[in-house]
Image (spheres, protein in one colour):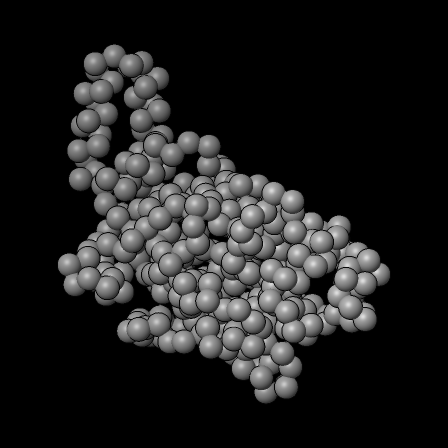
Length: 341
Ligand SMILES: [Zn+2]
């Protein structure tokens, strides 16, 4: 049977996608089965969107590049199922490093099963393997782009130069990071210690807390910088489609170990009451002031994250009621801010 015939009647056989397998990973396996490159396979199946002149990297393939109805007809898998396997994308670029679970890949190898790439690894917020509960291993995104067939997945996971050991010294943190990751992947409102929180609010809170934690130069974060003079990690904005289907934006380090370090601390602050935290945040007065100015957080969230900021916000409100926006207000507010130095 020629591929041209298969284009109309459907491929005679396709491997079953694995649990949570990324669409691009599965397509690479299908292409490998038929001895074709990925672009050739998609072209012969008539599954490329008409306006696509350049196929994106395998891990970025989604409904904007592939016609899901054509792919569904050719592979006998439901369109909605295929669409769910697709990458959620990351704009304007992917982080410098993504993650993969070496244990997941090893389990496949040990079982004599084909290697697959998990779609839960593909995003700036992915830090922990939810199956094994262990930190994901950094994978240079540029190395992923060089993967041309499914057999090369194992080679993509090479130790990143000078992989820091910091995280290994903090086994307890991985539980916090996993807890937050699960909440961030939820499609609906989730219950945080202060109450129900919508996905968009949770992202905003995570961004704000991460920003405050990262503005404090720490030896731990700078230890992962390639340059000895680098005092803070490279932080970029990443826009992606959240699990709830909304567009979300985060500002996070581009390197995985730094993201893991940071998100674990954000998770600890959100998960535990101030008195129960094993890692105590010493919020700077600038942080307290900025946090006190946040608006639209769910009730109780600010008091949980930083009681001093919640207290300052209340006192600022009280001053505003007393003085309006007169010079007296600004004078009193300056005195108030000075009192938290
Ligand atoms: Zn795993």
